Amino acid sequence: MTRRRLAVAITALVLIAGGGAAAVAAYGAPDRGSATAADDKLPRRTAAVQRGSLSDSSRQTGTLGYEQERKINAGPASGTLTWLAATGSTVSRDQRLYEIDGRPVRLFHGSGPMYRTLKPGDKGRDVRQLEENLRDLGFGSALTVDDTYTEGTARAVARWQKSHELKQTGRIGPDQVTFASGPVRVKEAGTAVGEQAGPGRPVLTVTGAARVVRFQLPVADGSLARTGTKVTVELPDGSTAPGRVTGVGRVARTGEDPSDKTPKIDITVSFDDPGKVKAFDQSPVTVNLTGRTVENVLSVPVDALLALPGGGFGVEVVENGRSRDVKVELGMFADGRVEVTGGALREGTKVGVPSL
Image 1 (cartoon, helix red, strand yellow):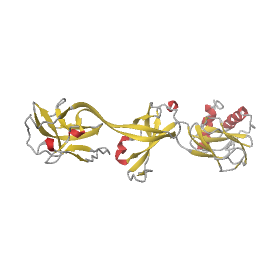
Image 2 (image 1 turned 90 degrees about the vertical axis):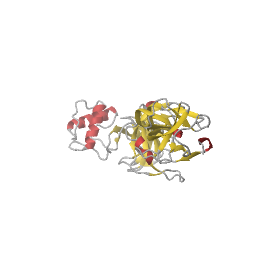
Image 3 (image 1 turned 60 degrees about the horizontal axis):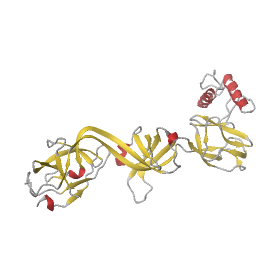
Image 4 (image 1 turned 30 degrees about the horizontal axis):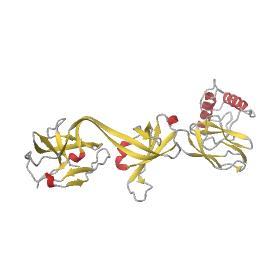
C-alpha cells in the first residue's frame, strides 16, 4: 500500500510535560521500505524544518472586574443613613464613605479592621495603622509610628478632627473611620439613604479600585499560570493590555458549564497599568498565557509526524527526489509545531505533510 492510498489517521497523544497536553495528528504507518522512487511515491506537500524558539501558550476567556470585594458595615451607632458614596465612584483615603445622622465615616488605609475606639494607652496593629494614616495625611509629621497610642497620637488625631470640623477629643473609632487596603470602588449600596442603619448592618459593597481579570484554567495547563507569569489581555475594543498572574486558586473544581467536567483552578490577573483599562465591568476578555520557552530548537508542523510501525514517532524526509522515514524524539508542542531531535535533521530539511 502506498502513502497516497492512506487516509490521514488522527490520534491523540497526551504529553504530560510541565502539566500541558497536546493533540497530535499523524499519518497511518506506511507499507513500504526506507526509500521510495521519485515518480509516484513522494508526498505532494512538504514543509521545512525550522530552527528557532517555541513557547507553549494558552488562550482563555475571562471576565473583567475589580479586585477583592467586601462589605462595609455600619459602625457602632444606630441612626438614619443620610448620605452614601455613589455606585461606581472611587473613594480615596480620608474621603467619605457614608454618613449616619450627618456624621461622616471616612476611609483610612490598613489591612486590619477598625473595631474599637482608640485612646491613649491602647496598643495593637490598629494603632500602627492609624498612625501611618495620620503621618501620610500630614497630621503627624513628628509622630513615631509604632503599636502604642501615645499623647502624641492623640494630638495628631485632634488635628485631623479639627480639619473636618469635628469635636477634638483625641480619640477615634469606627464611628469616624474604617480601614481598607487601599482606595475602594463602590459596587452597590447595602441600603438606601433615609433607611435606618445599625451596628453590623451592611451599608456598602465595595471592591478595590484596580481592574483585574478572573478566569478558570484547566488543571492540566496549570504550569502556564504561576504567580508572576506575564500575560496579554485582549480587551473588548480590540486593544491589548499587559499584565501578570497575581492569584492562583488552591482548589480544583469543575467549571460553571455542567457539560464540562474538566477540573479547573481560579486565576486572577492584574494589569501593569490598570488605570488605562476603561472597558465596562464584567466585560468578556481573552487572556493570552505564555509559558515555558525553548530557544534554538528544530521544529516541524505537528501534522508532519508519522506513527512508526515499531512504535514512537518519525518524519518523512524528502531529499534528492527520494524520501525516507526517520525516527525523532518529541519535545515542546506550540503554535501547531513540535520540537524534534534526532534523525540527523537540520534547518531547511524538507519533510512530508498531508495534502489539503
